[in-house]
Image 1 (cartoon, rainbow, N blue to C red):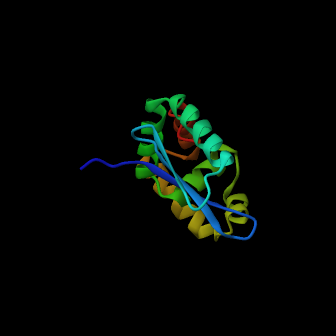
Image 2 (image 1 turned 90 degrees about the vertical axis):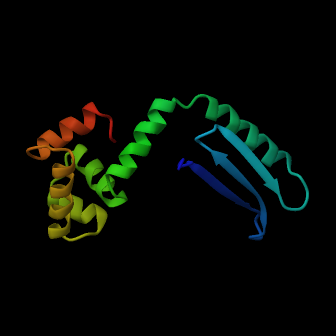
Length: 132
């Protein structure tokens, strides 16, 4: 089974009416634009801009990012980002609006998943592997 990475952007006007949708297939580097009602130059230009940007994406980077998102939960990635920024448990707790015991649990799981001995090694590994 192949997993496709797809980003979908819904486009709305000032009256909260949906005017279009842009689907970006990161796996195949393709963009599809769907218009609702009159075709818009802005949507056409934005689609072309996204297509151009897609060609600049390094496939190794997207694979690495995809692997990171499978390895860590979204909250663990947030905690890891805070660790790399040098925050302690109470600062992470305040920043992410979670309790200190929850922060400790996330840090423990991150340490275990990276096979690290402590949070300093987690920071080193995260920087080396460009996890954040």
